Structures are given as structure tokens and as C-alpha cells.
Image 1 (tube, rainbow, N blue to C red):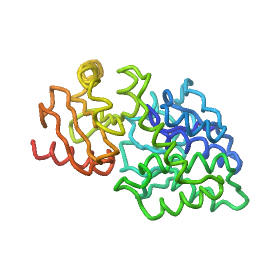
Image 2: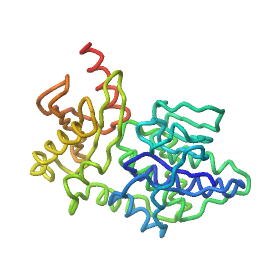
Image 3: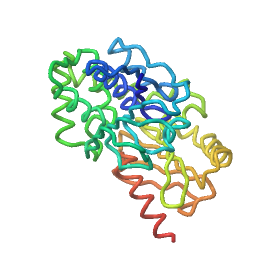
Image 4: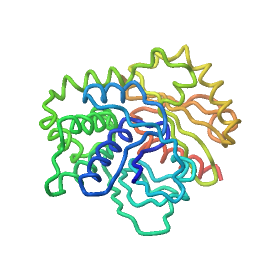
Length: 299
């Protein structure tokens, strides 16, 4: 049995792609099951409910020596325990090539697109006889709209736009109405504890010699989260200490103004004060290169 999963602290792209890829693998005669590596965020729960699709089970079994298929990541730091001892036989991703090393050749697709779901759609629809269901089309559509922030993100490509259009037709939904509902769910932080809010969308990175976590919280406007910033900062300090990080970076993004405010745990070489950056929406394409440049300049 092939275990198919995305990264820790899963976002909509990693969950939706795992579900569709596992279905595709089963169609191709490879027994596979989709899993998640953490709790679902409100946006992903919304997409699954709209698609009438159950959540994948939590990955709890030991994957040492077992076949696995990765979607939406290739950094060991973002995967489950013993990922380096598993048998990675497949990879579909749209990020930089991470720290993953394999002992044998694998099937791998990595493309410069705004969302892994865009690439998944391209792969599965090229398979003779495979029919993407309305439900799974809605999953991939939701993932694309999420990762590209409804095409506002600089990571968006023309392929993402065209794929989303085709998926909306297959899913038989009005994309404009769906976008409004999805963005409402995406920016909903009500009822989340400070710990859960910080973990809502965070990824582990190794940039040069620095071990860090980059978290992102997307809100409609900064004022909706300002009262939580002190508690979030305290939790960042705690996480940096308990997880042995060099530092923690929290990216709070206002979808209304297309700005991001960066908050850093104290032991960092960049800034002791928050930094506001105009037209920054993407952690992958904007924050990571920005941090890499700053950290390299510090040497």
C-alpha cells in the first residue's frame, strides 16, 4: 500500500492533491491511500464540505521501508518521522527542490506553477481512461484558488488560470461565487487558540545554516488580528526554544492591502521590530528569497 501525503500542518493544496493522487494511483493499478499530517484548517474543511469529500485519516503508522508518494513538498523537515528511511517512489510539487534524497529512482514532477493542484490536473488528465469526478475537480479548484489567493499571488501562472477555468466547468460551479466563500473561510481565525493559529500554516525550513519555521496567517485586514499579536509573539519564542530553532518568522498577510508584516522571534539576525513589506503575498516566491538574501548579507 502506497501512503500519499503532503507536508506537516497541511494546507488545502496538500490535502486536496493527496486525495486526487491516491485515487489516480488506484486507477493505475497501484494500491494507495491518502493521509494528512496534521489538523485541517477552516478553509480546507470548507473545501472538503463543498466537495462532499471526507477528510483523509491522520498518518500514524511507521513508514520506515514503506512506499510513499509526496505531494506539495520535498523538504525532509516538512515531512513525518522516518521519511528519510521510507521508499519515496513518487513526487509532485511546485516548490524549490528541498532536502529529500532517495536511494532509488522515482517518478517526479516539479513545475514552476502557482499550485501543486495545477500540476496534478495536468498529470491525471493525460492518463487514458481516467475521469476526474465533479467532487475531485472541486478539490483541485479550491486548492488552486487557495494557493494563488484567487490569482492575486505573484506565483500565479496562466496555466493556473486556465486549469481553474476547466475545473470550474467540470465541477459545475460559479468560480466568482466560490472564490468569495473560499476567501471568507481562508481568513476566518475565529475560535482558534493562539497555538492552533500559529500552526495554521507553518513550514520548517533550512536556509543556509539557519533552522527556522516560517508561519503565515492570512487575514482580511491587519486590525482583525492586532490584539492577538502579543500572545503570538510569546508562542513564537516558546516554539523557537522548545524546537531548537535559530529563530521563528511569522508572516501576517492582509489580503485587502496585499501587504505582509513580518514578526521575528528575538534571537534573529534580521530585525528586532516588525517589518511591513508592500505587495508581499507569497511565502514561497517572496518571503523565502527575501530571507535568503538577508541571511546571506548578514554573513
